[in-house]
Length: 419
Ligand code: PMP
Image (cartoon, rainbow, N blue to C red; front, top):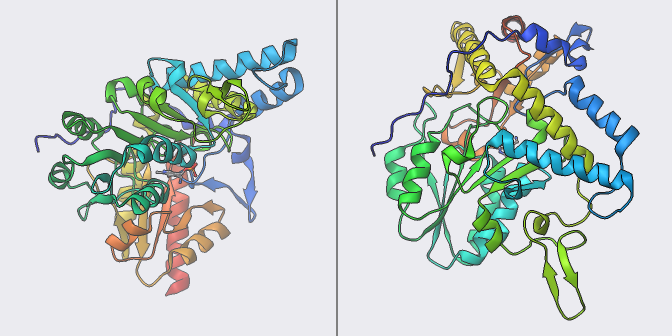
């Protein structure tokens, strides 16, 4: 397939100073087990800047009320801020319209919505859905569920030893009966950045819509859904410095218009009678009940924070960190890095000979270094490499080479203890 590997977009950027960013994150001044916190578990969840913490406090102190219902001043203020947050998400993703942004609990809920409301009604026995071997469980299991009940095949694009997708395999898999491609933008387990543009273009040539799981991308790379031309893009607020319990789904307007509601209740209707209910248009149609109002407003503050830092600058900073950590870890005898794709975001996964990943995580924690150990909700990918799990360090804009030095010192300490 004539599909060039996409190199992570690191254009020359203004130098980024992580020390200044660190000042914005009060939790980074915590001590853990008597040691300064070194937080390298950003792929699981990122920490929150003052801008987000203070936005939440200010909203609850001054503007809080339910949205879309009240004629009173506070309700109108809250509604303006909630809908303003939708506009911020639109701008962040460069979506054509704010009506194409649905607020949901996060990536998981967004993918389940697409699986149940978009895919299920379109799938027939003998069809197939294409995913990849890199997926997080939340981009596997929702498809398994609909596929199994409808007699639909779930096809999985394999990866090579480096953790890169087999694009020739992909080209063969997307066929006449393919009804959807669902793939991650960045692998949470090993950091691979997938060559989205070419993969989306190929699917579209064959009339197949594409969902992108952007959970691990939005805090690392500029995302432009108009340029990507994806049909759906899902992400979670908590992985991009925002609150938990809030995320968003971008979906092309014509898809949202054709999708039936999935959950029903207040706020998603135009009129209700016992005989008949008329639903509101999207996005309200998919936001039944009182939404996570403060969460959406906090998410907007987080996205504004990232925009101010500049995603090109963040990507360049994290590329330097990735380069440094890869060099330092490669020099450790008995350490194996899992995932050596040419295009990677700020995630490094590794195993140590004779050591369980949980032991590495526990010893590092004793030194104040927070990493993740386990299968990273990507058990099929771990099976592909014949292992149960890895230790994973994942970076954000506030990480420094000193954090990586602390990681390496902790690994050396673990080696000494296990000798
Ligand atoms: N996809 C990927 C690639 C992820 O890393 C995660 C979170 N680890 C998810 C989906 C699920 O995100 P959430 O739990 O916020 O819904």
